[in-house]
Image 1 (cartoon, rainbow, N blue to C red):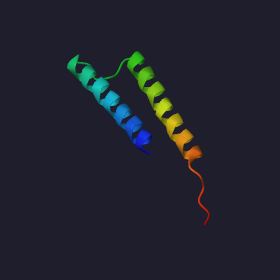
Image 2 (cartoon, rainbow, N blue to C red):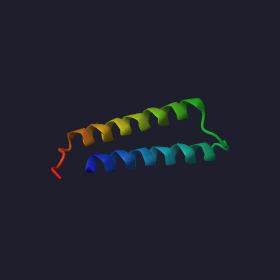
Image 3 (cartoon, rainbow, N blue to C red):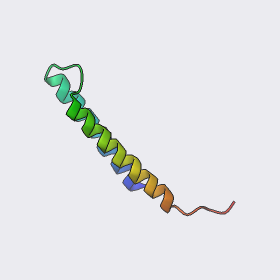
Image 4 (tube, rainbow, N blue to C red):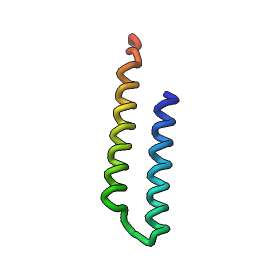
Length: 61
């Protein structure tokens, strides 16, 4: 669970950084490389979460 939180925090920080960097440069949109980077990061976070949920044993009902 802690790894999930850390991965999500990292993604959030990266999105914030890239958005602020774009604003600081006077741009209203992210460039293609920035978007590609965020898509890759998002995919990595999703994969980490999926792996962790697969590792959690199902509790009997």
